[in-house]
Amino acid sequence: MSNGLSAIAIAAVKDVSVLFLPVLPFALLFGVMVVESGVPQILGWSSSVIMFGGAAQMTLITLIGEGAAISAAVTTTLIVTARHILYSVSLAPRFQGQPGWFRWVGPYILIDQVFALTQVKELSDDADFRRYYLAAGFMFWGLWVAFTGLGIVLAPVIPDTLGIDIATPLLFLGLLLMGIKRRCQVVTALVSGGAALVLAGMDNQLGLIVAVLIALTVATFNESRVS
Amino acid sequence: MSVFGGILVAGIGAYLMRASFILLLSGVVFPVRVVRILDHVGPAVMAALVATTLTGKDGQLEAGLIECVTLTVMAVVTLWQRDLLSGLLVALVVFFVGNAIL
Image (cartoon, rainbow over all chains, first blue to last red; front, top):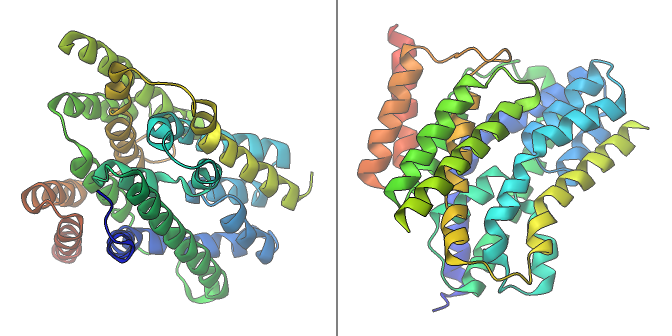
């Protein structure tokens, strides 16, 4: 059954507020990175609107700043972004009952945190899912665009490191734990995490993709055993 | 290619990756078994992201004792309270106190 629009919006605002806390220093540091890279500031900031993906933006701006060919920087950035294909596969069934416009608009805001929220939040009604997804996604987008811009403006007074790098793995760990609903998903998470540690030395975060694919192979085997 | 061209191509590429299967599979009926397997994508990606964010550029583990304790506290509090914010706040307090003491 569909919940009220305001209740859904309030839930999205509450959830995004928590999720954005660890991202905030990351957004400010991206601003510093843009200034230090020598890329025109308005162009660097425009990547927040056009790309909307922290790790991908940092990769692109860093490589361009280091003097890499733009085509090479873009290729590397797309490899870093490749995990979003997995989000697209995973959410495809959830988007099937949705209106066509939402299937086109929704993917623009499909980042790590928004994907994780869809895994954690129990929303069986299609309209509720759509409202929550859009409210959470565009609130995250607005905060990201605003704080990366603020990071550029305040770059001279922001230190190169804020000393709270631990916030990002904490966030993902919390989302992982909140999103696990079945015992066999624990096995998948352990396999994926272990493989990602072993393969962490691969270039352009390719180890992450390979680790996830290994874990999904194990998951397929486990699911076929269960059924 | 200009810098703006690069940002534009990267943005379009990112969008196409995010939209690819959502748009391509919009008319496909998923068997229950496939949906159950897709339920594993979230835990697999989140676990890999935790591991990746704990390692350096060359793949070396950068988490020390304080980071490991902080992650453990995060896990225990989040599972106990079933609340992300509580876990995050308690873990960050442990992290800052741990860094101040050691």
